[in-house]
Length: 239
Image (cartoon, rainbow, N blue to C red; front, side, top):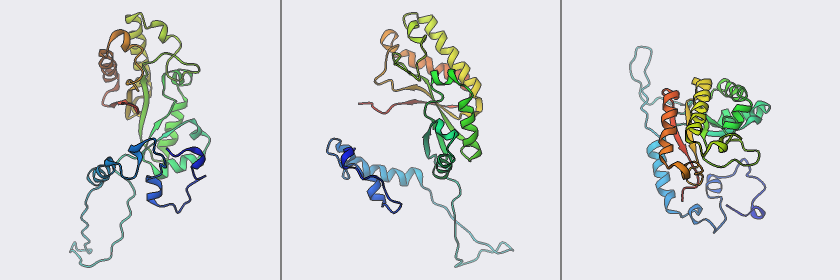
């Protein structure tokens, strides 16, 4: 990413597509440069996956097709899910809510469904989802059920008691199962998708003790209580 001191203060409303998509300005990460090999493939995939052909037939009141009719089409909803991460600022910022609903049709709650945050205030995510639903966003991802790491200061995702159970396999498993059952049952159909596990490429506190089979156990728990919800693994640094 471009060093902070070299970045423009903002992109103007008239900024071009090329200015936005190729805004990197750094030799530190070659994969972000304009000529990176993946870009051509990615653009081809956009044509293949995110676009589709349509046929429009204009008829008169008798159902007879008309030729050479000037037709204007406005898309009001996109089948492809364009998502954004949102936080509790949504509750008090109408402009934020407006812009999220204007540019996206799905959302993920950034922090409010992480384990510690949820247990401290289980009603907050419901209020956020209600606002999103009212704004037309009904595809909501829950993030996340398990984050396999040691507890940190002001941790949003690992409750204080969980690390004390890491050496007690049965108690640890029951604590995790209880949490997954509680949050998935409580949120119910408000959530369409769940991140079951977060960033396990670099966070393996429990797996280091009991092995990677824990991942399947956690997904099985989510299947038990999630019904037909889509279940995912989330990561960003896999190398």
